[in-house]
Image (cartoon, rainbow, N blue to C red; front, top):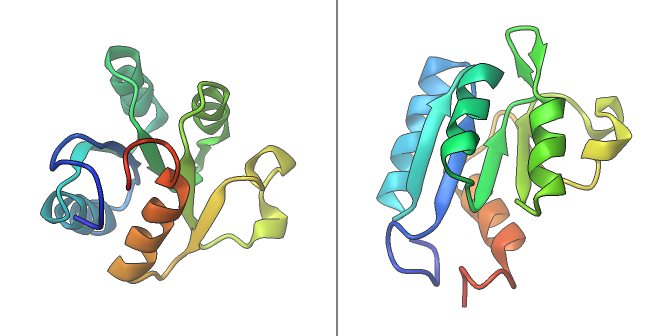
Length: 128
């Protein structure tokens, strides 16, 4: 794991409809010691997951086969869950309410994802 929390204690919600990207992302996060919620390829699955348990952080693609994830992003940010938007969209094409979220551009490297996670979790008690 990047520095800090005990393995498996940081819950990361993954919302990505591309099977290969979501699978690779899930494997990376587990290898780094995170507890992965998902991955979920639809808003329905992600909403069901957060109804059962709130994540510590969320990684989102904004476009899930034409279904935009903005309402779920709004819900999580309103509940103080840090959100990282993982997308090929540029920042100007995102709605203003999403521009405060950290953005990782596709294509990304594993280091890009881990750096973004460390940055948003800094100061939350999950990282030293």
